[in-house]
View (spheres, rainbow, N blue to C red):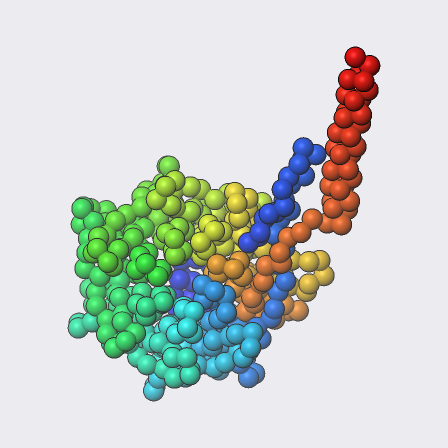
Length: 399
């Protein structure tokens, strides 16, 4: 099996339940359990050696990524249609799909070699046909990472002077550099995420300190560019994902070393996400409208995690025992994106093979024993109340 080489312009260079107990709690101290999931192996295209998942639609209906053998084949997966190969543009047989919207419009990158030579941003339509997106004048390569409901596509373009964040328009395939800057002149170099409100997240450069990576947010409606800053004690950040209601996730660090995952909101600012046990660094890669975050932590192995309602869980711990998936003892495992219905996509080792997966949230209900205890408690409360009423009637009769 080929090693998982990082390619230019991919987020993998930088980052390698839905009902948590809706049942009411009582004075007994009962509490919601961790979310539980089922998992599906998405398989491979043809005789592919391995597959990876990098994104899913906000409604969870589509998953996108790549399947690899002698070349990289971009795919779009759905429960109804399975893994479907997406077309290639002429002369480029190495493609990866990174983002997809609820309508199935898919975006990514197509390159000339397995190592990512001469990458171009592309989009795939619902029928699987491919269109190369037009790079801004003066730029010769690039990639597309995310697409929103209206067909705005966030990505990157590269010239001899370096990278610049770009917005592509699916309607006509055109691309334009995001030229807005912050008040201190920082500009966005890579756009990794976009929501349906037109908020774009990514990274940028501070001209006063070129060693910093600046986490940036661009409002495509107002033209305003801003920086979210970093966690206390840090000076650098990377913004990877944004939910439709404005949560932003990524990694905060000191000059981009040994990052800590974070979630940001306009109301609460930037908040650190606790790491799973036996890991020393990590990053948030995706977030949904509930503020649930998926990401990847590192130590001896790659440890994908879910952050939900203030608690951090390893992905491995959310699956039933004996599931034949390994998320804990390899360097291939990842959790890349989470849909609003709680479904999670990424890559892990299944029966010795590196494959893409989709995890589906199982609605939490009290265990049968819990129901018995709850009913018994309610019956007890009712019995005490009835006894109290009888005692009161006797006292009144004696007066």
